[in-house]
Length: 112
Image: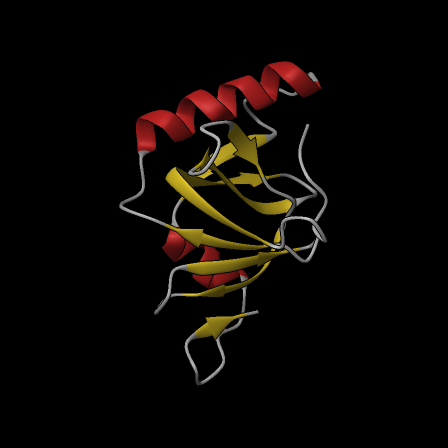
């Protein structure tokens, strides 16, 4: 079971990537570095390129470790589609440049 944001306010994700879900926004997908459990986050509300850190709607802060992993991301997206009864038209693979277009950037390099 996932811990609450209060119990675990910061998470490091490895083998990470981005997906865009219609009517929801951009979400991180990846593997929790400490537990090895795959995860799909709530929608991203802030992203900082210098530290590769994202804040999600839940208030949790995610630090992205290592390069994006498209293969793992695609597998996670397919699992998400199956779990929630979605179609391939509902969810798409995305990258940081897509996120940059969706979130305005402030002078400190943070998109929100």
